[in-house]
Length: 397
Image 1 (spheres, rainbow, N blue to C red):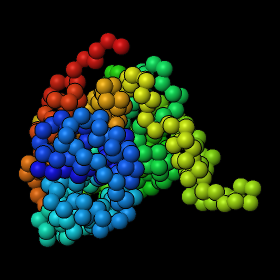
Image 2: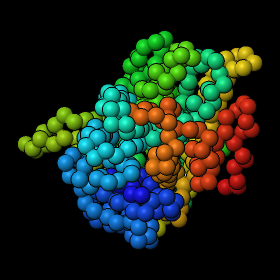
Image 3: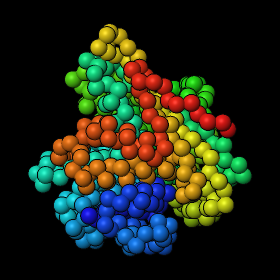
């Protein structure tokens, strides 16, 4: 079997590549990236002869379709603005598809391709990374025996205990982070979506160890784009996303001064797009990912508060996930979590373990049991309380 990872040289794509190489499910893994050098580095890091690298521009749908021909799955790890283009290429090539998220609005547009994927008996899964992805699957596991679900509040917090690390680093697409800081947050309330200012609704929340008390904010995210439809029969009236941790205040300031804007500003007679300038600066200063000489020690905890009716009456449940870094791979908690979730999804897709065809969000096609078991094998603890036990104790600092 053959897997193609587009954007496989990036922070999360390279993790997916490495995990797929170690999994042994695929006979060939193609690492494709606009930067062929990054693709080659990601392939070399696996130490596997099954992995080969190539350059590709995903804006060229014909070239992508040619590359995908004969593949069993496409893992799309490129920036979410190109999701529709890659999905079109997968339709042309007849290849199942998954990506790491569409930041709400893109996800909604992707769902519109459902009938075309069903016509070809293909499955496409928008948002099968960590958040969205594992978050959606855990919600469905937690609500499976609940006749009524009234409210879901998804909170994501992180901490960084890395010694000697840089004061600022991006462990996810900086462009996507800027969109989260700039675009209105979408909240599902009483049967409709409502816009809230980005970074509003500040709340000090007590996450399980090692994160602990952390201030979280509303930002634009993909879970509220699909969960209200998926849980409509159970009466979901409220769904929102919040996040916070080290570095988020830096992002708030960058957005507040306009450095995430696409509107040109004149600088000494030359029009400059602030966002392009900032992204170029991040690249020049090598702020994407941790330096290779640093031992990464950051952690991420996902805590989803679910209110509704359980088998024995009113209940509040917490679906929890604790995501470690992967120091041996030089991967932060976020990079590792997103990459392995995509790899798990690719393996399940290729094995025919998913449910359905068309364009389906993770909560409607990913079997929670096998997915959670695969996370556990990779060091990710999950729990649903009640009825399950809490997360296992966190080790010493």
